[in-house]
Image 1 (spheres, rainbow, N blue to C red):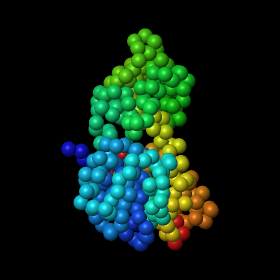
Image 2: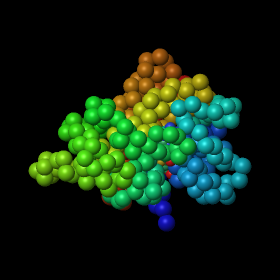
Image 3: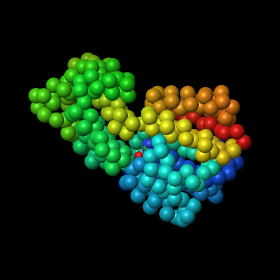
Image 4: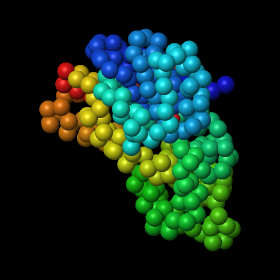
Amino acid sequence: MIEHVPVLIGEILDIYRAYPSRGHVLDCTLGLGGYAEAILSSSDARLIGIDQDEQALAFSRDRLRRFGDRFDGVKANFRSLPEEVTSRAPFGAFFFDLGVSNLQLTDDARGFSFQSDGPLDMRMDLASNRSAADIVNSGTEGEIADIFWKYGEERHSRRLARAIVRHREAVGSIMRTETLVAVIRGALPAPVQRKMGGHPARRVFQALRIAVNEELCALQEGLQAIPSLAAPGALLFVVSYHSLEDRIVKTVFRLWKEQGRGEILSKRLIRPSSDEVESNRKSRSAKLRVFRFNP
Ligand SMILES: C[S@@+](CC[C@H](N)C(=O)[O-])C[C@H]1O[C@@H](n2cnc3c(N)ncnc32)[C@H](O)[C@@H]1O
């Protein structure tokens, strides 16, 4: 049974209810449908949920069936929304809950987790054609190191990239998550691993996932499209899980404010309570920012 605890949902609903909004709701990261269910049950809004992951869509369509035609799920990437979605603008609220879902993380066959063995895949959209194994096995040492540094802020990026290339030459391609974890562990002396705080493969896995799914470009492009789809007074909620994402959101919100498009409601970053972090570990790095377009 998949656990689907929506992160910061209490804080989100408080703000959503405080500002009456018109138009449909667009959930750009439907995932397991946690936010969608909360919005559909606590208002009479119609909600369109998109996800690039067919499996997430199938799960959510089933979960949200009882809402009938108030819910519609569409397979799409938020970096280029299809006409099927944009034709339903203007929207009164938008949700971005970035990163991976529990469905992706707990399915070993998807290769997102460094905690269990699976194919080195990490594609959110199974129809896309570049997996983590493609990057690890065909990138040059320099390209791999750059990805680890840029998207994982991994201090040992060069050393790890060198170990990967050596493994490729001496043993063969790295096709399993377990093999990659073993190569990482083998490249870092025990005292270095202890100092890293957390799993030694955590940053490498984050970097590969971001690169495979082009997450930062997608976020930038996805946010750029929002103003033209927003109804007067529309709310935009973005929950991010690492500083690279949060920096993009912060910069875009500031720019919109300077351009006089609306106000930043999250004057101070909104973080989960200690109770939430205790009951849902995944929420510990979550940061919520909220923008309201001019009414
Ligand atoms: C953290 S989960 C969302 C969880 C959801 N809020 C809930 O309550 O169940 C993120 C989801 O966004 C999807 N996703 C990530 N980037 C995307 C993109 N560029 N376009 C469409 N979906 C994306 C992932 O496939 C994943 O299912």
